[in-house]
Amino acid sequence: MNKEFINCEICGKRLIERKENGLYYFRFGQTSGENLIPVEIYVIGSIKIKCIRKSCNHWNEINHFPEV
Image (cartoon, rainbow, N blue to C red; front, top):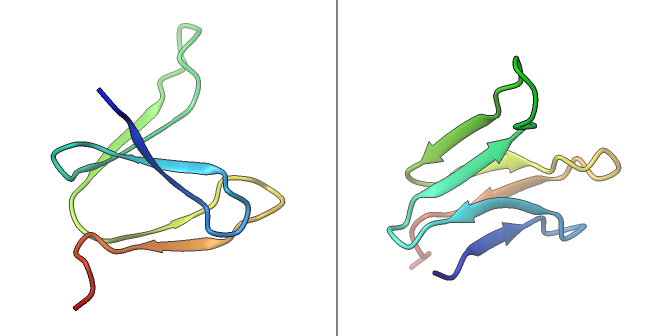
């Protein structure tokens, strides 16, 4: 199974994964430890996501549907 990732337009940091069915999947946080639970989000449609790299903070707009 190939994973397709969307990267930041400015710095190239990996931001979000696009699944084969078209959903976007975002996971952030650590999985080790008792009280640490990562944030997991599935997104349908277009999104605007800020780069999580501290030195970048660029807003990336990802269109779900191709522009006509």
